[in-house]
View 1: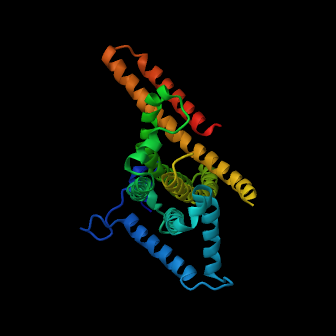
View 2: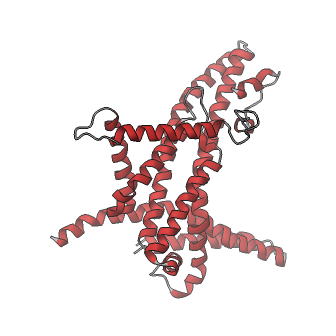
View 3: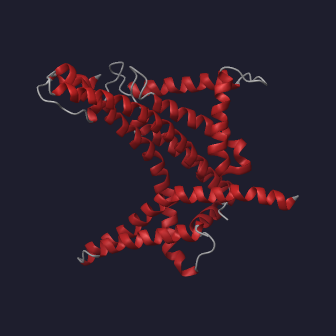
Length: 262
Length: 74
């Protein structure tokens, strides 16, 4: 909504960072902004969904249980099993929650009137990525030993001895710093960019069809509205994909900690 | 039946290796660039010879690709 009020001036101004700078909902409570409210709402949606789907399962699934089991089977077969093998079932609770939560977070970006992808504030994906990171290190030390974990990580077997001096730092940096960083940033950047793209095309359409309606400008406005619709569809695909990737990488990190490679 | 179960398991573990490799490559290459590119940059600042920075970046990428190749390539 804010993006549209920017256009009251004479000149078109593309929406930018002000899209993400939201005021507190209750004046004075500075932490309680729209993304926080939507994050709480998302948690409630996920809990309610899982509760109604899995709390009282029937042998022949119907209704919400049916949808829930499709989601469960998707996460189990595409996310958990490829990376965790026989340990997959033990981690389904975490992975399913992660997948559903991130997907609902992202979907908030296209729900009419809510229209804010929560992960476009980087603090939210960082919390999830740090949680997975702590879990990864804890599991690695538990299953491979405190020193063994780092030894297996930095000195994968099968390399010529002298080359370890050059490669061990890369392994360490990649596993300990770059991987968790990209885990959070990948989700954040996709949602951030997607939100700007949708806001941009909406703003162009609004400008040429309502603010400054001219014979030459109208077709541009029509194209922008069509683009808004097309990009919304594309964005919904990206939202699903990023939720899937987030859970997939979590499964990969957990799997890597449970068993040393080779 | 152990032979058969081993054969059944094989494609799955190959798939895991491939997926691990595919998702690790960007992270390794980025790490190689940061580490050796950064080292080259420091060397450039120290000696005043600018060419160390690009050399460091290239060495980092090459080492990262070599690492992925040795770990998952065969």
